[in-house]
Length: 323
Image (tube, rainbow, N blue to C red; front, side, top):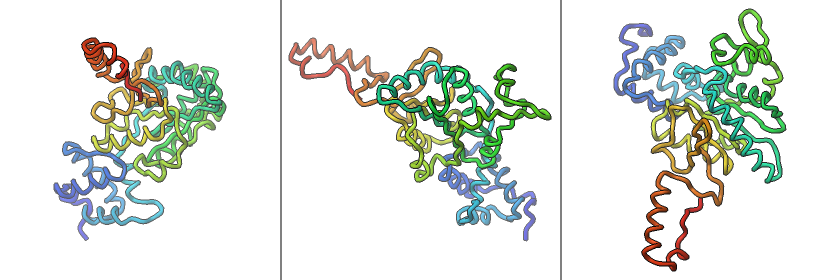
C-alpha cells in the first residue's frame, strides 16, 4: 500500500478537487472555490491519514458509500468548518432583538392569543449565541419558557457537545463585562461554566440546513438568527437556505443575518426593516404593504398616470401593492 503521507498524496488533481468540493457542497452547502483548494487538500488529507486511506479516489468512494450510523462525511465536515464565535457577538443586533423585535412580536402574539416566541439560532457553533440571547432576555425581565423559547442547531456534533457542556475559555468573553460573567458563570481552573439558569433554556439540535426531512420537524419560528454562516455557501445553496428560513418563519417573523451578509440577488420574499441600530429582514404578513427599493418610484409613476388619466383611473388602480 502506498504511504498516505507521501509528498504526492496531498496534491489533488483538478478532477479530485471538483469531486470533493461538489460532494461537500451537496451535503451541507459549504462551498470551496479554486482559491481554497489547498485548504480542502490539507483537511481531507488529515482525515485520510487518520483512516490510513491511500488515495483521494478511495476516500471519495468511502464517503459516497458510507451507510454507518456515524457517517464519515459528517466527520470530514467537522474538519472543514471553522467554529469561531463569542458571547454577545454583534451586540447591537442582539440589543435590537431584545429591545425592538421581541416587543413588536410579543404584542402581535398577544393579539393572537398569546404563547412564547420561538427563536432559532441556526449554525450556533459552541453555543455562545443562543446563551447570549437567554442572558439578555433574563436581564430584560423576560422569562424563558413563558415569553420565549430558544432553539439552537449546528451541523457539527463536536461543537454541539461543547455547547451542551457550557464550559468556556477566556476568548469567549471578549465582549462581556466582568459583572455579567460573574452573574451567569462560575470559574474553576481557568474555565467558566454557564449556570443552569441559562443552560436549561436552550434546546440544542443536530441539524443540517439542507436536510429537508429534519427541518420539517422544527416548529414554526418567530425569529431566525443565521449569522456568518451563508457566507461560506455559493449563490445556489444560499438561495436554498434562505428559502428554508422563509418557510420556517411565521408571517411577520424576522431573519437576522451577519453584518457581511445580505439577501441582494438571493431573495425578494423578505422586506428590509430599518430599526434604530440595525437593518434586519422580515417575512411580510398577509395584507402588509411590500416595501422595496422600487416602491417609491413605482408609486410616483402611477400617480403621474392617474393625474393624466383622470379620476376614473384612480378608482381602478391601487396605489400600493399588498403582499
